[in-house]
Length: 114
Length: 114
Image 1 (cartoon, rainbow over the protein chains, first blue to last red):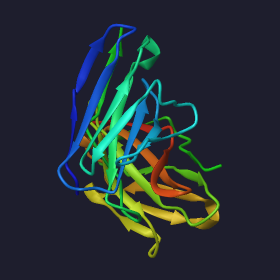
Image 2 (cartoon, helix red, strand yellow):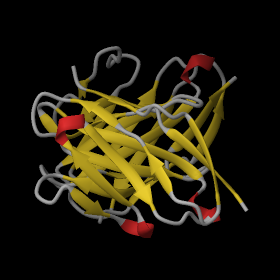
Image 3 (cartoon, each protein chain N blue to C red):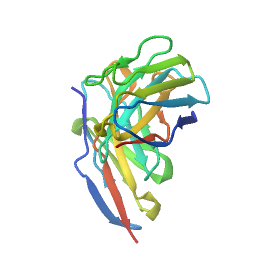
Image 4 (cartoon, one colour):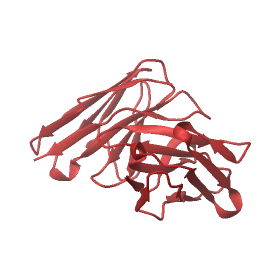
């Protein structure tokens, strides 16, 4: 299994600012994903982080709001831009080693926007 | 479109009682199915997965799940619940075009009475 480290674990931010969340994996993985879990809700996929190219975003999510980088096979960042209170959520990084393998999740970043 | 339904939002059981959490999915082909558990303030931990083969799947912590294609179900069971099993449980299906992209159900919150 992969060990995933997410930073920060939690943050309280002012509206209008941006926060960058880091995801570091202890081994090379094929796929990296970012999910959002709004308060009391289930998880929704934001995007697939592609190594060396632009991320693939799901319907309802755009690059300007959630820019993602993945410079190598073990690291990715998600930025939540121009935050509003509606962005208050847990953001989770997920990785898989390839097809037909399970997804592992980081501990998540609990973001509160005030 | 693929979807996952967890009909029970909250379930309360007594410690030592049996447990069954329901999950129904909508998917056009043989699905990849997962159960995850999320304890308060924690990330997601994989309990078990179904890719193919035996339809009764054994997982960690004494959990099992049975894939029933005719009912489009993947219910999670445990014969005797422990107080430490209190958590949120998510059923998920691997989405088209990327088995590792997950579509989650709404989750079932399990409370355990002593």
